[in-house]
Image (tube, rainbow, N blue to C red; front, side, top):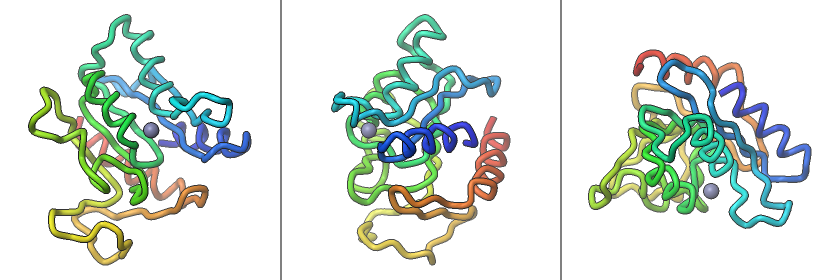
Length: 172
Ligand code: ZN
């Protein structure tokens, strides 16, 4: 997550929406990194896409079985589709995106039972059906802390990092 935040900061410094993503293999090694580059002229230039592509190159194939994507913001529909197609096993995101997120906010492409692959998702928010996801309240804490931040506004990386590290190790 530290690496994802560093990449996000890099993107922000370049005038991009600060989003960073990494793909981590089973052993905890980072095999793919990406940051937002849409302002460079590529409408597909989302952090997750770069990270997936780099990880596929590292693995030498399109199947990213057993990998985890760690990203600072909930992926959009395009990236959620890419995660499913790449067979990424697990998704961890730091903040939900009520405007474009498709991993629980506006929809949930990565856990659609009609698709032939689903991801385990560890998100900033765990919303259940029936809840209006447009409201951001801090009261619905489950068994883990939640982190909210708006695009471009950071959370405490150390705190977030500790949380995610804990989650990563408890799940692996
Ligand atoms: Zn995206």
